[in-house]
Length: 384
Image 1: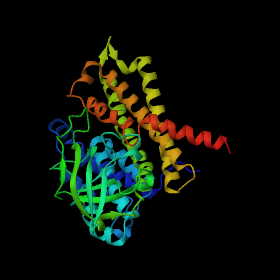
Image 2: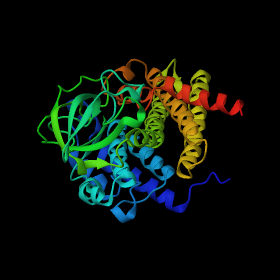
Image 3: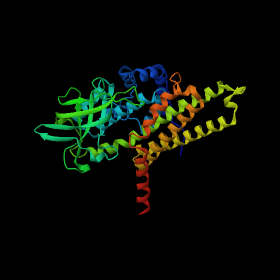
Image 4: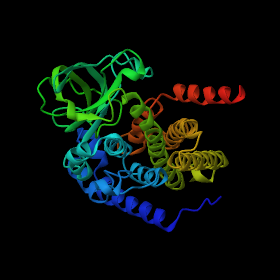
C-alpha cells in the first residue's frame, strides 16, 4: 500500500494546477457574475487532454486512470468548481461513446469531442424521474432507419442554443424495465430538438442548464451507442466515475476555501490580535483540514477500486462521493463563517464556492441515494 502519487500523477496534477491558475482562476468570478459559458477555455483544456481523459488512445484520448482524472478535477475545481464539473460531464459522454459505441460511432463523434470542437451533454434525468432513473419516459420508436424521440430531459448541464452540440440521451426503446432503455446521440440542430428557458440556479453559473425537449425528433439508428436495451447499464456504469469526479470537485473547491480561511484569519485582527491566534479558530481550522484529508484519501482509494474493477467499486464510489461532497460543503461553510460579514459579499470568492458546491450533494445521485447504495451492499454481504 503506497499513499504517494507517482511521478506521472504529480506531473498531471501540476499541469492541471497551472492551467487552473492561468486560464480559469482569473476569469471565474466574471463567468459566475455574467453567466458565461467559457467555450474557448474549454477548448484550451482539451488541448491538454482534459476533454478525453479516459478515452482510449486508439480513439484520440489520454487513457488516464480514475485516480488521474480525480487529480485533474480536484486541481481545476480549486479555481472554479462549476467549470471543472462541466468538463467532467463532457468526459462522461466521450467515455461512454468510446467504451460502448461501435467503431463507426466512435470514428464519427469522438474526434470533435476529444478537441471540444463539439461539446457533449448527458441526458438521463427527467422532470418525473430523478433518483428513480429507470422510470424514465422519453420514448424512441423505431421507424425504418430512424428512432423518433418524444419526451423531455431536465436539469441538463450544457443545454441550450448556445450550449452543447451533442446530447447523449437515455431513451426507452423497449418495455418499462431497465432492459428497455437505450442510449442514442442527438445532434443540436436536429428537427424536433428544442430547449426550455435557462434555469435560474443558485450556483454553477459558468455552464448553462435547461430542459431538453424532443418532439417527433428523428435520429438515425446508426446513432445508437451500444446495443439496443443496453442504455441503463451504460448509464449506471458511468455514475461511478461521475461520483468520483464530483467528489473531487468538492475537494478542490473546499481546499481553496480552507486556504483562503487560513490567509484571512492571519490577517484579520480583533481584540488586538489576529483571529488565527485564538484557539477556537485554530481548532476549527484543524478539524477542517483533517476532515478534508480523510475525504480525499477515501476518494483516492475508491478511484483505484473503480479503475481496477473491484467487486465493491460502486459501494466505494458512493462512500467517497457522500463523504467528499458533505465534507466539502461543510468546510466551505466554515470558511465563510470565519470571514464573517465579508464572506457573505461577492467581493470575496468563498460565497461563490459555497453556491457551487451545494449542488454536489444532489447530483450524480443524491447523498441519500448514496446511503441506500452503501447500506444495500452491507446488508447483502451480511446475508451470505
